[in-house]
Length: 140
Image 1 (spheres, rainbow, N blue to C red):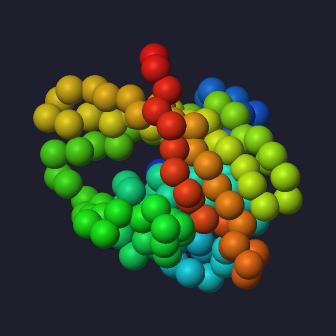
Image 2: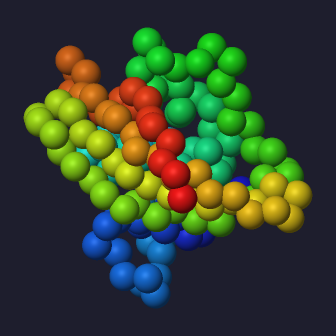
């Protein structure tokens, strides 16, 4: 069953803390379901987070550079993992075809809270589609 509210919460650096999350159908669904391509690296970041929440490995593979995508990638929804939210701290377009997104993804595994804080690199390919390249983990 698809979520009513979008798992990404409409995350952006400008988002107000108590702002209501957009509906999945109005946010990431069009990307994850293949009806549209993200126009920015930030949209791609949000849709990739949503794909992790939904366990959608094919979407993650399709949006990851073939050069850096791990061959054993499997995002199947792990019942022990509960995704809690996404915060996008910074979105920087470095040139027409390159961008960075700094984010924090919060989740719980077995009742223990974790944070994934990363600055991700994205590149627009020859077809004009944004792809995730890699990321650098941030401390704290």
